[in-house]
Amino acid sequence: NLHRAAQVVTAQYGGQFPADLATVLALPGIGRTTAGGILSAAFNQPVPILDGNVKRVLARLLALAVPPNRALPRLWQVSEEILDPQQPRDFNQALMDLGATCCTPRQPACLLCPWQPHCLAYQRTMQNELPISETRAPLVHKQIGVAVIWNEQGDILIDRRKPEGLLGGLWEFPGGKIEPGETVEDCIRREIQEELGIEIEVGDRLITIDHAYTHFRVTLNVYHCRYLSGDPQPIECDEVRWVTVAELDQFPFPKANLQIIEAIRSAKA
Image 1 (tube, rainbow, N blue to C red):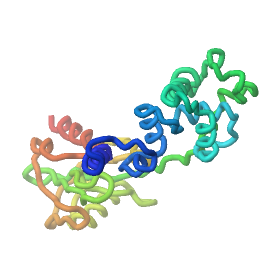
Image 2: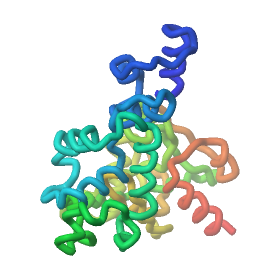
Image 3: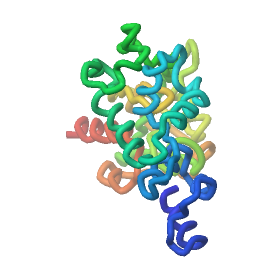
């Protein structure tokens, strides 16, 4: 988005960054807080901001009874009302600094805060309880069966994910989600048949890896497997390939799969 915004500024505004709010908001990747920060800092315009630090300061100042993200219109209104129109650059910077250095998430330094007499959270001894946090659902946990498939020549079968979706275009060791009531071994045999159209024999466990993504976490249950029969086909992926252990470094793998490669090398050593 930064590159796209720079291209728009160059093409449409002759390389001069626009100085009005509506035009800045129309640039790729620039939201209201970023626009306010730019216009107040660069042009000294009286435009409010509402970053994470400012949300926390205002939530305590008002003793906000809900998580800040559920009261954004009210917080924007207050940020605009308190803004010093004569010194917007210094005021917005001071407001952000207040949140970063004094009104911190934990153990705020209320005795040093210039707004202490006006802070409802301090008056009610609630400063350590505010802002109220959003209730987060627990991360979905997926159990995955993963196959390191060896042929008689000592090569390993890998596949490349389709370009769309999470980790698109990266190479991986094939496998899939373990269904309820299914053993890891049964899962691996089923997934390899469904995804690659081949028969394998599941052997010993190689490694178990826990890895967290933004919205879910996975446990990779990785097993050595022996190729038995069938012609590998990219049924649910873009490409399949037999490679040597030494060649694995030539292919881009997801971060979690790098631990599998290290385990393979350690097992061979």
